[in-house]
Amino acid sequence: LVVGGLSIFIFGLNLTKENLRCISNQRIQKIIYNSTNTVFKSFFVGFLATIIIQSSSGVTAIVVSFIASGILSFPQGLGIMIGANLGTCITAFLVGFNIQKWSFLIIIFGFILSTIFKKPQYQKTSQVIFGIGLLFLGLEFMEKGFKEIATSPIFSDLIILYSNSNIVALILGIVLTFIIHSSSAIIAILEQIYAAGIITLSPAIMFMLGSNIGTTMTGLIITINTNENTKKAVYANIIFNVLGMILFFILLKPYTLLLHMLEQKFFINFPEMTIAFAHLIFNFITVILGYFFFNQLVGLTELLFSKKEKSSPIG
Image 1 (cartoon, one colour):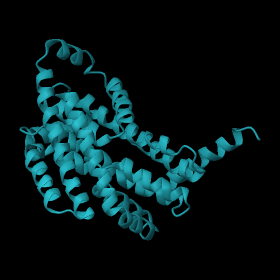
Image 2 (cartoon, rainbow, N blue to C red; image 1 turned 45 degrees about the vertical axis):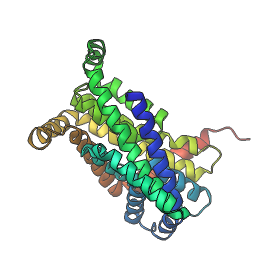
Image 3 (spheres, rainbow, N blue to C red; image 1 turned 180 degrees about the vertical axis):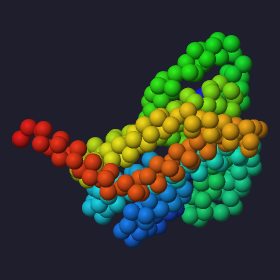
Image 4 (cartoon, rainbow, N blue to C red; image 1 turned 180 degrees about the horizontal axis):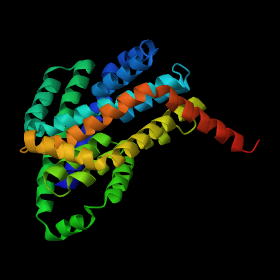
């Protein structure tokens, strides 16, 4: 159930992403081109584009192509990437509200639309709806699977053995997100694991922090055979998320306590929402800090690249 549900989830996510990109790609590109002349605008464009595409990796791919072609500068592209971090939180909240219970109705609705309307644009729209239905169907299967896994004594003992290791949870979040190439999928899995009581809150937070780093590292693959400005933007985004992780690691105990209090007061019957809020608070605070220290982040990245150039042998 877990592996099958994850497969359906990722397929639905990709189906939705690709068809949304076909529907609104030109529109998004026009917005990016005309609306990134300030830091605030570039942040907002990244946030909005990620909500539309439901994939920060998809937004990063578009931004990389714009930087590589010279349409966007390194700071403009970086601003969009940072704004995209906040946009990914929307998916986490949809998962937290248990929309997966409506998955079959969404799939049926998408199928009916594809049957009635034959124009390519309508077909793409129906595929988007169908993909969203598959996404939540996959989540439903994963939820059932994780509940079964939680009752296994062997697995429970194994998780308990490592549940107090925040470092292991951090590394797993980075590695799994890098492999799957979707922080949305990883956060969705994490919500289900936490709701099933397999993992405690503190390592769940560290897992989430690792996921935010892992999703930025997937951009390294996109930068192969691109120009220096593209590499700067991707590396700066990684640095941004690593610094955010360090900050929240230092504040882990009070942050965990705050989330635990919120859960007990508001989300006692919906523990998935605790992870969704943990994801939102982290990204909201780091994006605010990124806005006020944006020039310093750009300067740090420029400095690192200038040192790299000096250390490289000539020829």
